[in-house]
Length: 73
Image (cartoon, rainbow, N blue to C red; front, top):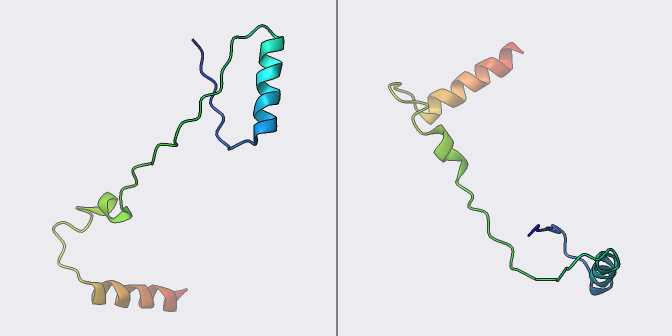
């Protein structure tokens, strides 16, 4: 069995046209609507865990360094 996945929602007319075309080509086809699976999105901060490990730094210091860099540019 081969599965064809249409990623966009199509109106019924377009679906019927695709199905008719496939049947004309002697392809046994059917339309099956499925609910789109929800993507599991992890928060961005999860990727940065441990990035500052071993450094004694706080938000105030980060902002100060940023201002100094902007001033130099």
